Length: 377
Ligand SMILES: [Zn+2]
Image (cartoon, rainbow, N blue to C red):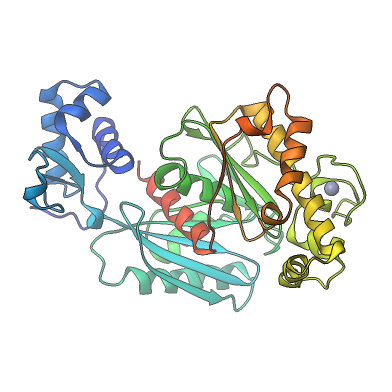
Protein backbone atom coordinates (compact mmCIF):
# COMPACT_ATOMS: atom_id res chain seq x y z
CA UNK A 1 0.00 0.00 0.00
CA UNK A 2 1.26 3.45 -0.93
CA UNK A 3 1.58 5.68 2.11
CA UNK A 4 1.49 9.44 1.64
CA UNK A 5 4.23 11.48 3.29
CA UNK A 6 2.05 14.56 3.35
CA UNK A 7 -1.66 14.96 3.85
CA UNK A 8 -3.24 14.53 0.42
CA UNK A 9 -5.58 17.02 -1.20
CA UNK A 10 -8.99 15.36 -1.12
CA UNK A 11 -12.01 16.08 -3.25
CA UNK A 12 -15.40 16.63 -1.72
CA UNK A 13 -16.81 13.09 -2.01
CA UNK A 14 -13.61 11.59 -0.59
CA UNK A 15 -13.78 13.97 2.35
CA UNK A 16 -17.40 13.02 3.05
CA UNK A 17 -16.60 9.31 3.15
CA UNK A 18 -13.52 9.80 5.31
CA UNK A 19 -15.39 12.10 7.69
CA UNK A 20 -18.17 9.57 8.08
CA UNK A 21 -15.81 6.72 9.00
CA UNK A 22 -13.72 8.98 11.21
CA UNK A 23 -16.50 10.46 13.32
CA UNK A 24 -19.12 7.69 13.24
CA UNK A 25 -16.72 4.75 13.29
CA UNK A 26 -15.91 1.78 11.10
CA UNK A 27 -18.78 0.85 8.79
CA UNK A 28 -19.59 -1.48 5.98
CA UNK A 29 -19.60 -0.11 2.47
CA UNK A 30 -23.32 -0.84 2.21
CA UNK A 31 -24.10 1.22 5.32
CA UNK A 32 -21.86 4.05 4.17
CA UNK A 33 -23.43 4.20 0.72
CA UNK A 34 -26.87 4.40 2.32
CA UNK A 35 -25.88 7.09 4.84
CA UNK A 36 -24.21 9.27 2.25
CA UNK A 37 -26.80 8.72 -0.46
CA UNK A 38 -24.24 7.28 -2.88
CA UNK A 39 -24.54 4.33 -5.23
CA UNK A 40 -22.60 1.23 -4.20
CA UNK A 41 -20.47 1.64 -7.32
CA UNK A 42 -19.46 5.19 -6.38
CA UNK A 43 -18.79 4.14 -2.82
CA UNK A 44 -16.61 1.24 -3.95
CA UNK A 45 -14.60 3.61 -6.15
CA UNK A 46 -14.23 6.21 -3.35
CA UNK A 47 -13.22 3.55 -0.84
CA UNK A 48 -10.58 2.30 -3.27
CA UNK A 49 -9.21 5.85 -3.71
CA UNK A 50 -9.02 6.38 0.06
CA UNK A 51 -7.29 3.02 0.50
CA UNK A 52 -4.76 3.97 -2.18
CA UNK A 53 -4.13 7.26 -0.38
CA UNK A 54 -3.36 5.30 2.78
CA UNK A 55 -6.18 6.91 4.78
CA UNK A 56 -8.54 3.98 5.07
CA UNK A 57 -8.22 0.21 5.31
CA UNK A 58 -10.67 -2.42 4.22
CA UNK A 59 -11.41 -5.55 6.14
CA UNK A 60 -11.04 -6.63 9.68
CA UNK A 61 -7.52 -5.82 10.78
CA UNK A 62 -7.97 -4.63 14.36
CA UNK A 63 -10.48 -7.21 15.50
CA UNK A 64 -9.93 -10.94 15.21
CA UNK A 65 -11.81 -12.80 12.48
CA UNK A 66 -13.52 -14.93 15.08
CA UNK A 67 -15.66 -11.95 16.08
CA UNK A 68 -17.15 -12.22 12.66
CA UNK A 69 -17.10 -8.69 11.28
CA UNK A 70 -17.87 -8.66 7.57
CA UNK A 71 -14.78 -8.24 5.41
CA UNK A 72 -15.98 -5.13 3.59
CA UNK A 73 -15.79 -2.94 6.69
CA UNK A 74 -13.94 0.34 6.22
CA UNK A 75 -11.67 1.58 9.00
CA UNK A 76 -9.67 4.77 9.29
CA UNK A 77 -5.91 4.16 9.49
CA UNK A 78 -5.16 6.05 12.72
CA UNK A 79 -1.54 6.70 11.78
CA UNK A 80 -2.37 8.17 8.38
CA UNK A 81 -1.88 11.58 10.00
CA UNK A 82 -0.74 13.21 13.22
CA UNK A 83 -1.87 16.55 14.53
CA UNK A 84 -0.26 18.84 17.06
CA UNK A 85 -2.59 20.68 19.42
CA UNK A 86 -1.36 23.50 21.64
CA UNK A 87 -3.13 25.38 24.41
CA UNK A 88 -1.52 28.61 25.59
CA UNK A 89 -2.20 30.18 28.96
CA UNK A 90 -0.57 33.34 30.30
CA UNK A 91 2.39 31.35 31.57
CA UNK A 92 2.43 27.85 30.09
CA UNK A 93 2.11 25.83 26.94
CA UNK A 94 0.29 22.49 26.88
CA UNK A 95 0.84 20.37 23.79
CA UNK A 96 -0.47 17.02 22.60
CA UNK A 97 0.10 15.03 19.48
CA UNK A 98 -2.91 13.05 18.36
CA UNK A 99 -3.48 10.52 15.63
CA UNK A 100 -6.12 10.85 12.93
CA UNK A 101 -8.81 9.52 15.29
CA UNK A 102 -8.15 12.15 17.96
CA UNK A 103 -6.31 9.72 20.25
CA UNK A 104 -3.59 11.49 22.22
CA UNK A 105 -0.24 9.72 21.86
CA UNK A 106 2.07 12.05 23.72
CA UNK A 107 1.89 15.28 25.66
CA UNK A 108 4.07 18.06 27.03
CA UNK A 109 3.71 20.92 29.43
CA UNK A 110 6.23 23.76 29.36
CA UNK A 111 6.48 27.14 31.07
CA UNK A 112 6.54 30.18 28.77
CA UNK A 113 9.91 31.93 28.92
CA UNK A 114 8.17 35.14 27.91
CA UNK A 115 4.87 36.35 26.46
CA UNK A 116 6.61 37.84 23.47
CA UNK A 117 4.91 36.55 20.31
CA UNK A 118 8.19 35.55 18.62
CA UNK A 119 9.37 33.61 21.70
CA UNK A 120 6.08 31.73 22.04
CA UNK A 121 5.99 30.91 18.32
CA UNK A 122 9.56 29.61 18.46
CA UNK A 123 8.66 27.42 21.45
CA UNK A 124 5.72 25.99 19.48
CA UNK A 125 8.16 25.28 16.62
CA UNK A 126 10.45 23.37 18.99
CA UNK A 127 7.64 21.35 20.51
CA UNK A 128 6.30 20.51 17.03
CA UNK A 129 9.71 19.23 15.95
CA UNK A 130 9.98 17.10 19.11
CA UNK A 131 6.49 15.64 19.11
CA UNK A 132 6.33 15.03 15.36
CA UNK A 133 9.75 13.36 15.22
CA UNK A 134 9.46 9.89 13.71
CA UNK A 135 5.75 10.18 12.89
CA UNK A 136 4.51 9.16 9.48
CA UNK A 137 2.56 12.22 8.34
CA UNK A 138 2.65 15.39 10.47
CA UNK A 139 -0.38 17.04 8.93
CA UNK A 140 -1.31 20.25 10.73
CA UNK A 141 -1.03 22.32 13.90
CA UNK A 142 -3.83 23.85 15.96
CA UNK A 143 -3.31 26.45 18.66
CA UNK A 144 -5.97 27.63 21.10
CA UNK A 145 -6.02 30.31 23.74
CA UNK A 146 -8.38 32.55 25.68
CA UNK A 147 -9.28 35.36 23.31
CA UNK A 148 -11.05 35.95 20.01
CA UNK A 149 -9.95 34.66 16.64
CA UNK A 150 -11.02 36.90 13.79
CA UNK A 151 -10.85 35.92 10.14
CA UNK A 152 -10.11 38.61 7.63
CA UNK A 153 -9.37 38.00 3.95
CA UNK A 154 -8.51 34.38 4.69
CA UNK A 155 -6.09 35.30 7.47
CA UNK A 156 -6.62 34.58 11.17
CA UNK A 157 -5.88 37.15 13.83
CA UNK A 158 -5.87 36.64 17.60
CA UNK A 159 -7.57 39.56 19.31
CA UNK A 160 -8.04 40.44 22.98
CA UNK A 161 -6.00 37.60 24.39
CA UNK A 162 -5.87 39.19 27.81
CA UNK A 163 -3.64 36.69 29.64
CA UNK A 164 -0.93 37.02 26.98
CA UNK A 165 -1.52 40.70 26.24
CA UNK A 166 -1.92 39.98 22.51
CA UNK A 167 -4.05 41.83 20.01
CA UNK A 168 -4.22 41.57 16.20
CA UNK A 169 -1.58 38.79 16.16
CA UNK A 170 -1.56 36.67 12.93
CA UNK A 171 -0.67 33.63 15.03
CA UNK A 172 -1.72 30.92 12.55
CA UNK A 173 0.55 32.37 9.88
CA UNK A 174 3.50 32.65 12.25
CA UNK A 175 3.05 29.10 13.55
CA UNK A 176 2.79 27.83 9.99
CA UNK A 177 6.10 29.50 9.13
CA UNK A 178 7.76 28.09 12.27
CA UNK A 179 6.54 24.53 11.73
CA UNK A 180 6.31 24.31 7.94
CA UNK A 181 2.76 22.95 8.30
CA UNK A 182 -0.75 24.31 7.88
CA UNK A 183 -1.83 25.93 11.13
CA UNK A 184 -5.11 27.16 12.59
CA UNK A 185 -5.96 29.11 15.71
CA UNK A 186 -9.09 29.20 17.81
CA UNK A 187 -10.58 30.34 21.06
CA UNK A 188 -9.87 27.71 23.73
CA UNK A 189 -13.46 26.89 24.63
CA UNK A 190 -14.30 26.69 20.93
CA UNK A 191 -11.47 24.19 20.57
CA UNK A 192 -12.75 22.20 23.54
CA UNK A 193 -16.18 22.19 21.89
CA UNK A 194 -14.71 21.02 18.58
CA UNK A 195 -13.02 18.14 20.41
CA UNK A 196 -16.27 17.12 22.10
CA UNK A 197 -18.24 17.42 18.88
CA UNK A 198 -16.07 15.02 16.90
CA UNK A 199 -14.72 12.62 19.51
CA UNK A 200 -16.33 13.33 22.87
CA UNK A 201 -19.61 14.18 24.56
CA UNK A 202 -21.11 15.59 21.36
CA UNK A 203 -20.63 12.74 18.91
CA UNK A 204 -24.26 11.72 18.80
CA UNK A 205 -25.95 15.10 19.12
CA UNK A 206 -26.73 17.81 16.57
CA UNK A 207 -26.86 20.66 19.07
CA UNK A 208 -25.11 21.34 22.36
CA UNK A 209 -23.55 24.03 24.49
CA UNK A 210 -20.16 23.46 26.13
CA UNK A 211 -19.21 25.59 29.13
CA UNK A 212 -15.59 25.86 30.20
CA UNK A 213 -15.34 27.14 33.77
CA UNK A 214 -12.10 28.29 35.29
CA UNK A 215 -10.28 31.62 35.43
CA UNK A 216 -13.11 32.87 33.23
CA UNK A 217 -16.24 31.48 31.68
CA UNK A 218 -16.39 30.51 28.04
CA UNK A 219 -18.93 28.70 25.95
CA UNK A 220 -18.96 26.86 22.66
CA UNK A 221 -22.09 26.33 20.61
CA UNK A 222 -23.03 23.57 18.24
CA UNK A 223 -26.24 24.08 16.27
CA UNK A 224 -27.56 22.07 13.32
CA UNK A 225 -24.37 19.96 13.40
CA UNK A 226 -22.14 23.01 12.98
CA UNK A 227 -19.73 24.69 15.38
CA UNK A 228 -20.74 28.34 15.56
CA UNK A 229 -17.83 30.70 15.08
CA UNK A 230 -19.76 33.95 14.93
CA UNK A 231 -19.25 36.90 12.62
CA UNK A 232 -16.25 38.16 14.61
CA UNK A 233 -15.02 35.00 16.34
CA UNK A 234 -16.73 35.72 19.64
CA UNK A 235 -20.04 33.92 20.01
CA UNK A 236 -21.47 32.73 23.32
CA UNK A 237 -20.35 35.56 25.60
CA UNK A 238 -22.50 35.99 28.66
CA UNK A 239 -20.03 36.99 31.39
CA UNK A 240 -21.49 40.42 32.08
CA UNK A 241 -25.14 39.42 32.12
CA UNK A 242 -26.92 40.57 35.26
CA UNK A 243 -27.44 37.99 38.00
CA UNK A 244 -28.30 40.18 40.99
CA UNK A 245 -26.88 40.26 44.51
CA UNK A 246 -23.47 41.61 45.46
CA UNK A 247 -20.27 39.77 44.58
CA UNK A 248 -16.70 40.34 43.48
CA UNK A 249 -16.19 43.35 41.18
CA UNK A 250 -15.60 42.36 37.55
CA UNK A 251 -13.24 44.20 35.20
CA UNK A 252 -16.09 46.51 34.17
CA UNK A 253 -16.86 47.36 37.76
CA UNK A 254 -20.10 45.37 38.04
CA UNK A 255 -20.78 43.67 41.36
CA UNK A 256 -23.74 41.69 40.18
CA UNK A 257 -22.84 40.08 36.86
CA UNK A 258 -21.96 36.48 35.99
CA UNK A 259 -18.25 37.24 36.45
CA UNK A 260 -18.96 38.51 39.98
CA UNK A 261 -19.90 34.99 41.12
CA UNK A 262 -19.05 32.24 38.68
CA UNK A 263 -15.32 32.32 37.94
CA UNK A 264 -12.64 30.87 40.20
CA UNK A 265 -11.22 34.35 40.99
CA UNK A 266 -14.72 35.54 41.95
CA UNK A 267 -15.26 32.49 44.15
CA UNK A 268 -11.94 33.26 45.89
CA UNK A 269 -12.95 36.86 46.57
CA UNK A 270 -16.45 35.92 47.69
CA UNK A 271 -15.06 33.26 50.03
CA UNK A 272 -12.49 35.67 51.46
CA UNK A 273 -9.30 33.84 50.47
CA UNK A 274 -6.19 35.15 48.70
CA UNK A 275 -6.15 35.28 44.89
CA UNK A 276 -5.07 31.89 43.55
CA UNK A 277 -6.13 30.08 46.72
CA UNK A 278 -9.11 28.33 45.15
CA UNK A 279 -8.18 24.91 46.64
CA UNK A 280 -8.55 26.48 50.09
CA UNK A 281 -12.14 27.48 49.29
CA UNK A 282 -12.88 23.87 48.31
CA UNK A 283 -11.26 22.64 51.52
CA UNK A 284 -13.25 25.07 53.65
CA UNK A 285 -16.50 24.24 51.90
CA UNK A 286 -15.86 20.55 52.58
CA UNK A 287 -15.35 21.41 56.23
CA UNK A 288 -18.70 23.19 56.21
CA UNK A 289 -17.41 26.77 56.48
CA UNK A 290 -20.33 29.11 55.90
CA UNK A 291 -18.64 31.74 53.76
CA UNK A 292 -17.03 29.24 51.40
CA UNK A 293 -20.31 27.37 51.00
CA UNK A 294 -22.11 30.65 50.30
CA UNK A 295 -19.57 31.52 47.58
CA UNK A 296 -20.28 28.17 45.90
CA UNK A 297 -24.04 28.61 46.31
CA UNK A 298 -23.90 31.97 44.56
CA UNK A 299 -21.65 30.54 41.90
CA UNK A 300 -24.04 27.63 41.31
CA UNK A 301 -26.97 30.02 41.02
CA UNK A 302 -25.07 32.18 38.50
CA UNK A 303 -24.23 29.07 36.48
CA UNK A 304 -27.90 28.12 36.47
CA UNK A 305 -28.82 31.57 35.16
CA UNK A 306 -26.25 31.26 32.39
CA UNK A 307 -27.29 27.74 31.38
CA UNK A 308 -30.97 28.73 31.38
CA UNK A 309 -30.31 31.64 29.01
CA UNK A 310 -28.45 29.43 26.54
CA UNK A 311 -31.12 26.74 26.74
CA UNK A 312 -33.81 29.37 26.13
CA UNK A 313 -32.00 30.65 23.06
CA UNK A 314 -30.66 27.44 21.52
CA UNK A 315 -32.80 24.58 22.91
CA UNK A 316 -29.79 22.23 22.72
CA UNK A 317 -29.88 18.46 23.06
CA UNK A 318 -27.33 18.64 25.85
CA UNK A 319 -25.32 21.01 27.98
CA UNK A 320 -21.73 20.02 28.72
CA UNK A 321 -20.11 21.55 31.78
CA UNK A 322 -16.37 21.15 32.20
CA UNK A 323 -13.26 22.99 33.34
CA UNK A 324 -11.19 23.32 36.52
CA UNK A 325 -13.85 25.25 38.38
CA UNK A 326 -17.02 23.14 38.44
CA UNK A 327 -17.07 22.38 42.18
CA UNK A 328 -20.18 24.48 42.72
CA UNK A 329 -22.13 21.56 41.27
CA UNK A 330 -20.90 19.34 44.12
CA UNK A 331 -21.54 21.84 46.87
CA UNK A 332 -24.74 23.48 45.69
CA UNK A 333 -26.42 21.53 42.93
CA UNK A 334 -29.84 22.50 44.34
CA UNK A 335 -29.01 26.21 43.79
CA UNK A 336 -28.07 25.47 40.19
CA UNK A 337 -31.39 23.66 39.67
CA UNK A 338 -33.28 26.43 41.43
CA UNK A 339 -31.81 29.02 39.04
CA UNK A 340 -32.75 26.83 36.06
CA UNK A 341 -36.33 26.53 37.32
CA UNK A 342 -36.37 30.30 37.90
CA UNK A 343 -35.09 31.30 34.50
CA UNK A 344 -36.06 28.66 31.98
CA UNK A 345 -38.85 29.87 29.77
CA UNK A 346 -41.12 26.89 29.13
CA UNK A 347 -39.60 23.98 30.92
CA UNK A 348 -38.01 22.77 34.16
CA UNK A 349 -34.49 21.89 35.26
CA UNK A 350 -35.27 18.18 34.80
CA UNK A 351 -35.75 18.59 31.06
CA UNK A 352 -32.22 19.87 30.51
CA UNK A 353 -29.59 17.20 29.87
CA UNK A 354 -26.52 18.24 31.86
CA UNK A 355 -23.37 16.30 31.00
CA UNK A 356 -20.58 17.14 33.42
CA UNK A 357 -17.32 16.05 31.84
CA UNK A 358 -14.05 15.33 33.63
CA UNK A 359 -11.36 17.82 32.78
CA UNK A 360 -7.64 18.22 32.50
CA UNK A 361 -5.75 21.02 30.84
CA UNK A 362 -4.59 18.77 28.02
CA UNK A 363 -8.24 18.57 26.85
CA UNK A 364 -7.90 22.09 25.47
CA UNK A 365 -4.76 21.05 23.57
CA UNK A 366 -6.56 17.98 22.28
CA UNK A 367 -9.39 20.22 21.13
CA UNK A 368 -6.83 22.32 19.26
CA UNK A 369 -5.51 19.15 17.60
CA UNK A 370 -9.06 18.29 16.55
CA UNK A 371 -9.35 21.85 15.21
CA UNK A 372 -6.24 21.20 13.12
CA UNK A 373 -7.78 17.96 11.90
CA UNK A 374 -11.02 19.73 10.98
CA UNK A 375 -9.05 22.19 8.89
CA UNK A 376 -7.95 19.28 6.69
CA UNK A 377 -11.55 18.57 5.74
ZN1 LIG B 1 -19.39 42.41 34.65
